[in-house]
Length: 354
Ligand code: NAD
Ligand code: IPM
Ligand code: MN
Image (cartoon, rainbow, N blue to C red; front, top):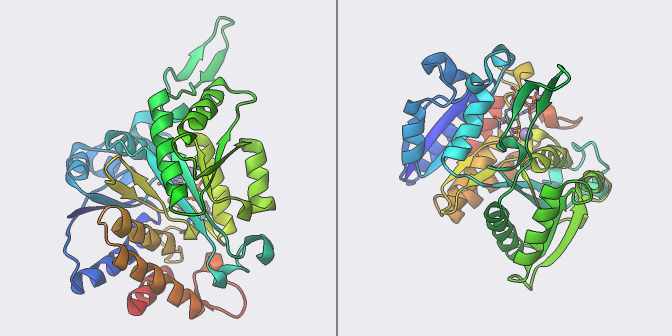
């Protein structure tokens, strides 16, 4: 199996370095994978003048699985849009047809007090957000900024979903629900937006094939509220690209920190790109203080989904649980009575626990 590593920008190289230590430990223990590395985002712009250059594209297409840190940084925000790091990320998702983004929000019991929500609200939390990743307003055409008939400038984007795009993500979500608590909540804004009313219609139709899953629907504004009011009412949530982007950041705080939320972006054959749900955190980059656990947990997802290695995935997850149980915390999840450690020390501790 070929694994491509894309450190990216900001804290990306720091957190990916920790996941690489874990991967190397697994390789020492008998895992056979071929590893390569390439730049994506700002790092790729600096090296090749493009955020998703051919060099990276070739390796990405050949890989069975990809591990990414994060992309982006203020130094790139003034570039022409096609050259910006975020475009590189969108391009690789689209190029590899990674339409199914799984973002599990799980609260480890030791972190019940790290969340800004009351422990009783979040303890035992285990929800899965299934975010459609290659459609919606992110990719819909036309888009841009133009001068309108009144001579005024206006910005515009197009929210768009083809039936086939909704069907395939709905199947992923129903099948995920079948393997868990058998409850699926589809999130839309059907009261205002035709695109998402259509989404609701198609998801309802797909539901006929999954009579064992209880389907519900919720407007996105209510879903945002319910996620902080009573998040444990949810099992699996499925939603479009932009709603999923926002709701998954919100859900991350239920787990204590955005530094805890991993993700898998899968194609129809379980080839996947694995990355923490957070960004490149320019405010803490280069300080060795970022939380690497979302990235390490993303590696666990890589083992599970693309390498079909459930045993090693569980071992990595158990190693993360063990360091949390030992009381080690990076700054974002630190609380009195625990031991504050750096990003690299956290990585070392996970390797030791492994
Ligand atoms: P961000 O997720 O990078 O940071 C938000 C806040 O969370 C910051 O205070 C940051 O310090 C903190 N944070 C994030 N990850 C952390 C970690 N592992 N440990 C501890 N704290 C962490 O979001 P932002 O500030 O809105 O965006 C920064 C840049 O990242 C932008 O260029 C944005 O486009 C990009 N971005 C990239 C991705 C990605 O590559 N998948 C995702 C989101 C944002
Ligand atoms: C994410 C990020 C990306 C997104 C950006 C950086 C393009 O926020 O992975 O959640 O919006 O999908
Ligand atoms: Mn996001």
